[in-house]
Length: 534
Image (cartoon, rainbow, N blue to C red):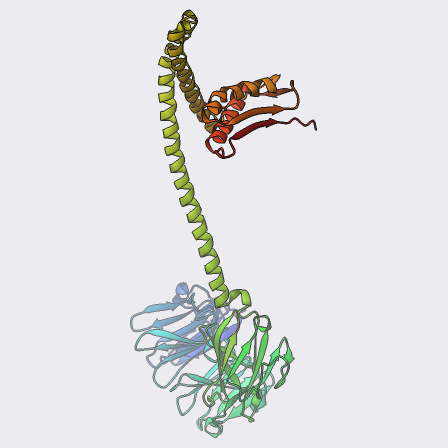
């Protein structure tokens, strides 16, 4: 018969899923929602009725309808999974898990296995198994060993293992171990690309899977498993994509790579490739590998390619380990291990760092010493300045009363110039007072020189007359000590620009030292002045 809608016309929606529940109700799922066809007096009605459950569906594109042993109705859509519980009239929704993109999203198939758990195949979300006890899903994806995340069909065999069809071959989930064994066209399948919900198990336990390239049928118990434990070994070493020979000039390999336990690379030879192989010759193209470089990465990496390349590996010590599984997923013997050392460049060796440390320690010492000496000199300079300031202050204080003394002395000297006896007593007092005034002036000039405020008072004068006056000042001392004392000059008049006060100090000090250290045996002292024009 042709089932009609409420308008008594054939339905136009595409019917995708049909199932009959334990009460005899026909559930019809289409791209337009969920409908039912109920039996009355032993006969089905001529029209379908929209199910009220449809109002609870986020998306009305129905993919799968399945009733489990507890009479719960599972509805799979393209945007979630729903479980309807007739006993309580309640519906539970399961949506996509954000941590597993695609899980419980686009539902492809739903089956119940012997232990009562519900298996859900999704489109690129893998296989999800609902545990009736914990009420939680466990999802298997390509990371767990599935050849592809697009699960199209699920069958449980007599040994409680799950056979899963995908669009990249057939996979067997060994439920006891949680491991997958994958099969492809090379194992005898009609093709690798299977059709959605095209699977069946007959009463004899034979499994059927339909695909785009034909029908694949087999008895799971008749499939032999390769349980051979094959060894894994290294086959070749390449440096910058070039094979490395034994005892080559680079010195990397002293013996065959299969027997080598350690390889030492220079810092500029850290771009290398390691080839390895599992010695399983039954469909070796299906061998798979896991490897890790300890000291560089923390996680094992899965690959189907028996080769790995490392570039710009930092200096250090590493351990490379690789394991293999044969064509049926059974592991080989113990992991192959190779110690790898990448030497640092000379500027990053321990002795280079020791030199750096010594250099910077020396530099730090010099800086600290410089700062300490500078602070010490600054302190000494400050003390010296304090002394000079003190002496300058005292000199100022002494200069004032001394000036007041020299004034009356000058007047007395002029007033009693004819009084020989009195003048003889006044002149030494006046000379000593003048000398004391000069000493005070020198002290103040020294302070000015220290502070950079000393200025020269340069005038043009006859240098011969100026020197002769100073010469005469020491004549009495020469006569007293019995020293021949002469001033020798080639010219009588030599005009020069000079500061009389400063030059007087120089000549007085010079002659004072000359008399002080004069050879008493020679009894002679000459002041020789010679002028050369340049």
